[in-house]
Image (cartoon, rainbow, N blue to C red; front, side):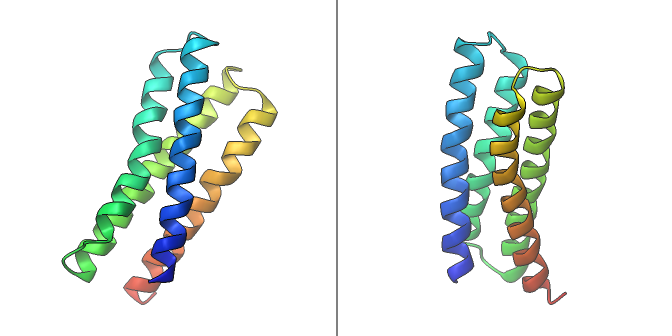
Length: 117
């Protein structure tokens, strides 16, 4: 499915951005709690998308992508907290927020399509 390839590309690219953000937060901002949380949820999105490629059924596929969607929403939450606490600035936030919104929107579309909604 072509959407899988697009989703995989989006989430790998995003995970790499999250890894760089984590390194920046730890080394430059000395932020260790939220940085670990966003690292875990932000890289988990792609892991669940990767797992969906070998789903055993449509229900399993939907389940894996639904978990990815939950992780994406959690990642957005941590981004908002990092921004609101002034740990990251407006430009940093808007840049990565655009990516997570694209991922969330794409996951919703794929899940709804697979469910026949």
